[in-house]
Image (tube, protein in one colour):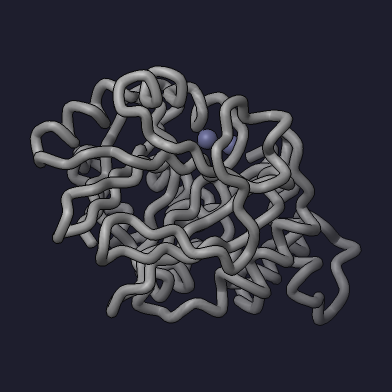
Length: 263
Ligand SMILES: [Zn+2]
Ligand SMILES: [Zn+2]
């Protein structure tokens, strides 16, 4: 499996992806908003895009579908309940489904509601797993729930699915928000030295050559995966004086999401 991360350099800071089979050169395009860049990258590599996967129904993820299908005749895959919001779907996906790309690539579908209620992530079946997480998990952050999502479900997705993946899992999010998000981490946990160090390292990085994080790193620098941090909880109590003495993880997550909305 080869992963090509494509930086769109648009105002929304989207990342698009190509996932290719090393044997056959067949490729799946994830959220190919910038269809021109995706097509150019595929041509450059000698790959044929045969499938398109939309992680969810938002326009900054689906906006390239029509042009991509016209150029490649690729099949369009998305959450099975997104039929009314994503025109032209060829295959509806459910939890546990396997997407094959060429002969060598297997991608497992995770049903990951929260950012929207028809959001999927893909987990590769490879020696080192890779997670394509759309707008659910970001580097040092979590998706918002303003446009069709629910924070309760986002918490369940984080707690019951994403946090349980192996630490070495590579994280491929749908947007480049890492600088802002590390700022939020440090606002909540000023003593988080790894977050400080990482911010220094990546502050001026070219998003076209972005650092790829792992779930293990996210557990250190992402507040939404640090729900037991004493500093974080103490600082949260300053914003929410009614916070219980030993708040449960869900309460911490929901309050953090609320704070992030107005940060
Ligand atoms: Zn979205
Ligand atoms: Zn998005």
